[in-house]
Each structure stands twice: as C-alpha cells, then as structure tokens.
Length: 210
Image (cartoon, rainbow, N blue to C red; front, side, top):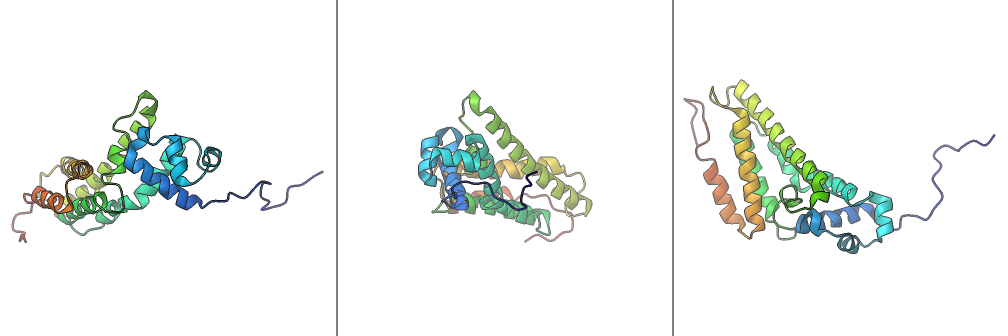
C-alpha cells in the first residue's frame, strides 16, 4: 500500500513570481480603475504574470478582488482600526476623517477610496462585488457605532446621543471626502472640510472644549 509522505509538495513548476507584490499591483489597478475598468489584460500586465498564473494563484477576477479588498483593509485603510482605539469619541471621529484625507490623497497612490469607488459603475455581472463593498462599508459603520455606544455608556457623549446616527454621519462624510479626493480636490481643502464637520460635535455639559 502506498503512503503519502508528510509535508510533501505537489509536483510542478515553482510559481516564479512574488505573489505579495503581484497582489499589491492588482490592488492599485482596482483602486484606480474600479472593478469593471480593471480588465484581466490590464491586471495581468500590471501584475507581471500570465492569465493562467493569475487564476492559479488568486482565482478568478472576483476572487482576486476579494483578496485585494482584504489587503486594502489591512494596509491603506488600516487607519480605521487604529482610530477606534482613540480614547474619546471625538478623537475617533477626528482620526477617521484625518486618515481618510491622508489615504485618499497620497501622491504615490490612486486618489479616492477603493471601497467606495471599486464598484460604482458595474454591470449586472458585478452585483456580487457591489454587495461585497456594501457589506464592507456597513461593517465599518457597525464598528464605529459600537465604539460610539461605548463612549455613550462611559459618559463621553451626551445622554440622548444616537450612536448609530453619529457613526453614519462620520462614515458618510468620510466617504464623501474620498469621492472629492478622487475628483481632484486637494488635501488641505479636504482637511478643512473635515475640521468643519466636527466643529459642532456633541459634548457633555461641563466638559471643557479646545
């Protein structure tokens, strides 16, 4: 009876390319052109691999996009998770909007937000990608809402504050900043808009303001 050796690898040619680097390049293509605009030829050209290699390493285009979105969340969009660790609700909101402005206007990266513009104009075939990005944005809102609920429970927000509405305000404004960045609005102007959006932040009575 033939037995399989432990830790044996399938016989075949080595991959021959840096999968991490290829995924990074794919992220930039999706970020700049959106899901629909990122054709297979454009993706494989940027990644420096063949279509066969792309499918073997990452799956089809939708599978690749899912991996790219994970990379984007853990990389360029990681400011969101860091912002939630700020000690106050206002600090959280400030960090979210400042992070949005920074990330969407970096000279070496496409402007705008992959999670907002990735599937703005897709055909019916891209419905699953649109649904994926809706879920991604809703997850971000839920995380902010939970953080603001904690702030309310701890007395950092005034009684009667609606954490869900406040979270929707911050995240919607952040996505709006991203759209403006993609349209060419500069970093300084976007930061001024972010600052203006937080001037009427709800404060607890008796709490000194800056």
